[in-house]
Amino acid sequence: MGLQKLNSLGFKKPEAETRVVVAMSGGVDSSVVAAMLKSEGYDVIGVTLQLYDHGAALSKKGACCAGIDIHDARRIAEKLNFPHYVLNYENVFKEKVIDEFAESYLAGATPVPCIRCNERIKFKDLLETAKDLNADCMATGHYIRRTQGINKAELHCAVDNSRDQSYFLFSTTNEQLEFLRFPLGGLGSKKETRMLAKKFDLNVSDKPDSQDICFVPNGNYASVIEKLRPEAMDPGEIVDHEGNFVGTHQGVINYTVGQRRGLGIGGLEKPLYVIKLDVEGKKVIVGPKALLKTTNVPVEQINWLGDRSLQSKKEWHLSVKVRSTRPPREAILRPINDYSASVELVTPEEGVSPGQACVFYERKGTRVLGGGWITR
Image 1: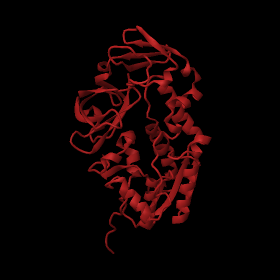
Image 2: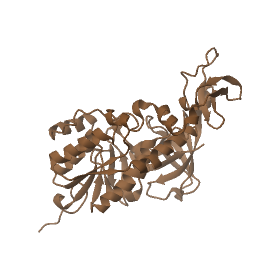
Image 3: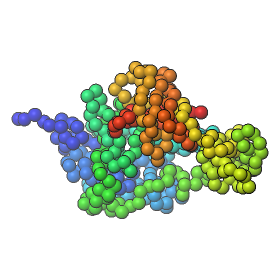
Image 4: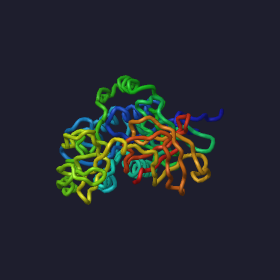
């Protein structure tokens, strides 16, 4: 008998003996992953998280993890004939994601709750559930690649740059990476995913992508935060960076750092931008665009994925992203300890905001070296 070669998920055993839990959101990406793996002969189990259940989200297209999506995921599991479980994580989600979103937004930060959801729920609690089901690994529909390096599994950007989700997955730990698989990371485009959905005859092949943060209907942050922290709607003053009064506002919550339009302070010689929010003092602080530019980014709660330890070098020359929508920029990372560092951007960036993530990449490659959270 010949040696068993590695299967497509990297295990030395037949597909039928390899159990994989697929995290199914009910969308086209995770549905295609489940169909692909099932067609290859793997022992597939689908798991869907119910994260919240307010009426607006149930009827809303383009949100994930609510009623209609659970129904879609269940139908696909039935069609392809594999077991499917729904786990109710509403309380955990509210406590670990929604409440923190409100708190950090009110602290003048611009939070990225999708990262916290991946970190605290999908790749923590859901991953534990996959292990409880005796799975060999867990697969998701994220657009990112996992490759086996010399020392350990590595995280790399997706082949399709426009779909790459590495910014949202920087906090995936080395241990989690050993257990996770991302079958879509090597596809050339979203079009390919939809073509696969049609090939597998999935009823979600034309389903629109989710756009907004799932618990924020129509992208209206203010309405969500107003319910959790009504005082954020209290009116107050708009002042310039030297403390001079320039106008009034109807709630700090209605402003974001970097905003120029809709400030209601016309008649000024030069345009002003929101440069800071002072929630306690109920002040919106504005100033010239130059004050939005910075080269110094303090980063904490770092998750490091490099081969050598973070502190093994005084300086790391790499690339960083300070917003999900921006390309990586050259930077120098100077570790303070294993979990915090100062990042110096080679060219100044605008709108570097506390509460956003700063994600580290190899300077001339696709590897994700980790990241952390931007602090003041």
